[in-house]
Amino acid sequence: MTSVISCTDVSKRYGDVQALDGVSLEVRKGEIFGMIGPNGAGKTTLMECLEGLRTRDGGSVEVFGMDPERRPGEIRQRIGVQLQSSALLSRLKVGEALALFASFYPDPVDWHALLDRLGLGGRLGSYVDRLSGGQRQRVFIALALVNAPELVFLDELTTGLDPQARLAIWDVIRDIRDAGTTVVLTTHVMEEAERLCGRVAIIDHGRIIALDTVPALVRSIGAGNTLRFTVDGRAPVAELEALAGVTSVEQEGGSVTVRGSDSRFPGEVLGVLARADLWPRDLGTEQSSLEDVFLTLTGREMREEHPA
Image 1: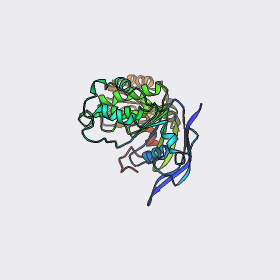
Image 2 (image 1 turned 45 degrees about the vertical axis):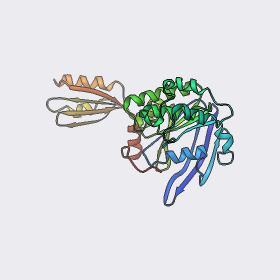
Image 3 (image 1 turned 90 degrees about the vertical axis):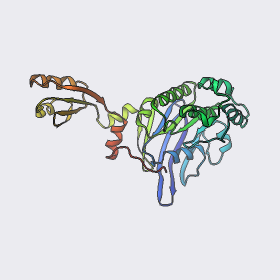
Image 4 (image 1 turned 135 degrees about the vertical axis):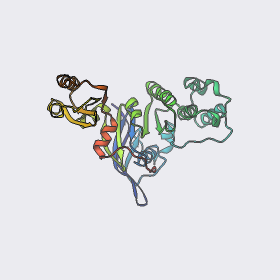
């Protein structure tokens, strides 16, 4: 599959902070590629190096086979960018913003149709700063798409949105991909990457610590399912631990957590409990996720830090 982005051993330092430390990756045409990790991991710095907005200290970057530092004008005609912190002039209306940005390009899209596609057709005369959070994000997506880009960068697009607005934006991103545009997004919301991305790179302290599809990353740590339930009395921990596929059993009071890598182990656990005349309550299962992958690879949960 054709690569639209390729970077090798990219580094960037801010004073004593090594924001990027030997990052290498490629992005394939037509995919949604996610760069995930905590705030401060280096995601935005890497994206800005790919966009040609920031000068790297070392390594190589190619976008459409061109170095964004050497041929920025050519590349910017073919990409769309939604920055992590975006703002427009106050008292600017939606239609005015789209008309302004469309004037920057020789062959822009029909931005009226674009706004209709994004559910903003009735907001032409609305001031951008008076829209809801989700509507403002759609405006910034429209601005990033007004030049019909082959590649679009979306940086922490849904930060601060309510769950309903976030789900709506996810649908918009899928539509962008389905229309043939390659999407690169950053997020520290693991569920967002799981739901949207074909492949993800987990970035921490300026390094890529894992890169693959979500299912492959989960399989790589030997993770499986978690079964949680409550029982009256002591669970037969030793017997549960002896089951094929069970990796751990924990009991705290009446609450029991059983983890396993075999899809059949939940049924076998219930069989053991039935033979012990124990009937589980509040029974629930959880599949391993990118959060579990991050925890396994770094030894800690996702954290909040100042952006790099």
